Length: 142
Image 1 (cartoon, rainbow, N blue to C red):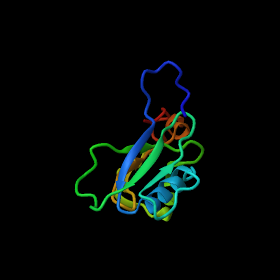
Image 2 (image 1 turned 60 degrees about the horizontal axis):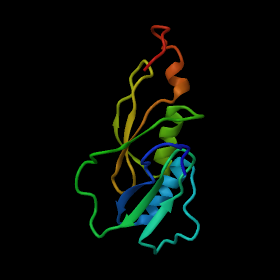
Image 3 (image 1 turned 180 degrees about the horizontal axis):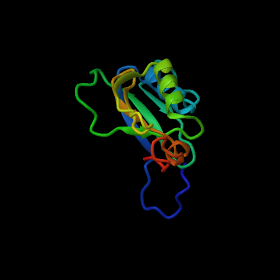
Image 4 (image 1 turned 120 degrees about the vertical axis):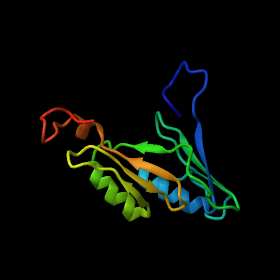
């Protein structure tokens, strides 16, 4: 699954509780441009978004209760081949809800979202955007 050869442990999957595992897996698969494991069906109690080289799978498990509190951990996502603002629009189109817009006039910052079941994640700028000079200073931005 990963390209680590000498690690004693690796993250194999990150597991989410979900009221509707297939629907939530479909959201994350679309957002991350991955596939749901072949054979996982909407009625299944567990659905896997397949891992990619160097990244773990995402496993969604059916639970009866909804999300009750703020996440204690969340994903910070950075675009690899597009700009942050393009991915923000894409996330909204896929069903994410914007919780907080932390973008600044100089182009730095991020946006906090909730997935369709309320799990928070952030979208920041990718490496190319971070390396581009800021309009006001001409220096690379954070």
